[in-house]
Length: 126
Image (cartoon, rainbow, N blue to C red; front, side, top):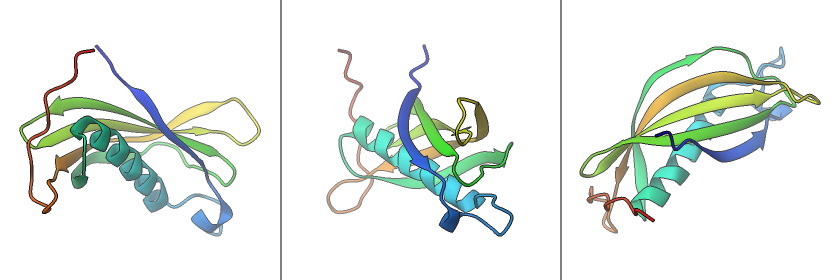
């Protein structure tokens, strides 16, 4: 059963673009990392860090003015880590058109107060 959630939305601004008006891939990846961190911290109930990003490829450009929406899904939970599927979509400026621009797997590790890996709590089955 899929549990994909809209985790964040942010506008792409001129400061995030190259001279041609394309948004830097690193900026898009940063938004995805922020969203993965939000979702993983909610699942872990505390601090998390990014351990790895897997299989990221840019499918479409993001342009100035587009709204980038990031969706996350926890797809696997280990003892101290989680794997999240993360997708970035662009809602094109002044339209309702949406296109997936990239996706990747993010591996996040739960940390305790001293910064050491700590077990991820069992899922809450509400």
